[in-house]
Length: 553
Image (tube, rainbow, N blue to C red):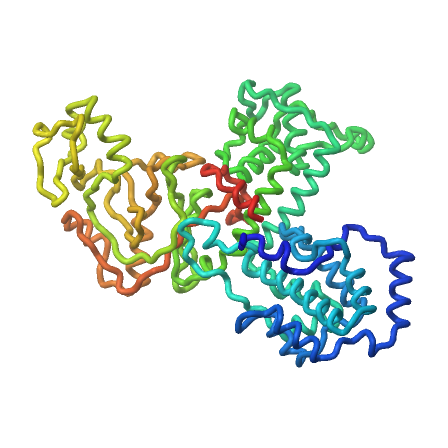
């Protein structure tokens, strides 16, 4: 059975069709239910107990916990309660979820409720328990994610968020016919989740508007547009920015300016206000924030807004997985697609830095581990992929390659070999190791954590690469801007007696320094996430992972 679609068929039959008429039909249904004897409408507790036993198969099942709070009594006795559940399900798209995954079938909730009232006690009990399953399934998906990240993401090892909402408050919400209140109990209360949720509403509205309008595109091969430029392309630029929701790029009715004896701004002039709007767009799309509309910015402006809705749905699901990662104190997490690293110190203070991650084809993996130690003045043993795909072809082309890079050739047991004695067309089982020093790609310090893929955080001599807006440039490891500051904090926060400056001055190669306490670390992949300014930033899906997750949702 496909676990990722666990409630598509297992929750309960009967999807409430959007916009279902509640006029005369609803009135007739209400009258019929009111006229039926109360004893005929309420299933006995014994029937509910039997139904619970039939559908729950493990200790701690939330359905069983729900009915413990009702003392095994039925919960869905009034039409207004059922209507409240139906209305609450129709709000789930705001969280990127599909109501049909919770109640799908030929009957709406109202119709199924009415039919159960006219049927046997067992049928009434079955409806009651299915309605509870429907609600609790939605609550679980809101709080813990619809999908199990361990089944969806290779390397994901952190447990799913715990079920923390109070079941007694859920029961109270059902009793009060306020199921929306129950959903609010389960919905993640993190700032990031709320910002993504608001962004989803915004981009859905932009997509609807885009379908009703025809906004011209900027010529893709045009010259870069800069402040003080003039012309028709500037006017198109304003319209493209408005298409993306940056409405301040457009001017109002020019007639307004005439009525107040003011001069209307020229829509074909690239003024300071338009420059600010361009920079806002660039920030939100992980582009260099220079206010210049070059090739990359033109392409981003000309893209369709509709696919952003899918991107936000996918990342809302990822956000539902994230609380155990982001709440750790201390804890490090690397936002791979956002090219950022975040460290939460024991005090709650947060430190962030730019990172360089693996390029497509040499991806930085999603993984969860703990930082155990540091290596100061490291040598670099060339990883197998780089050895096979980069180093060996270079050695074959260039006999001086090894000497210029201060690399030694070693046997598997570490014995030094003479490069001249090796047939580089068929070198066999040898290793390359680069000496510590200014040219070493690991820089002066490496942050180590157990993993099977030889991934670590490290320094780099190529610091100019941090100035790029998109930094998927490495062979899988993570280069950290300001890694020495990170190391100093790790030493301080774990109670180490070592000081980085002293270790660097001693100059000994491959000096391993173990932390007194391990620090949790996670590498995660997020293609839309709020920045420190609270703006949701869209990142390129450089590893092409969004489509598979969207399909599973």
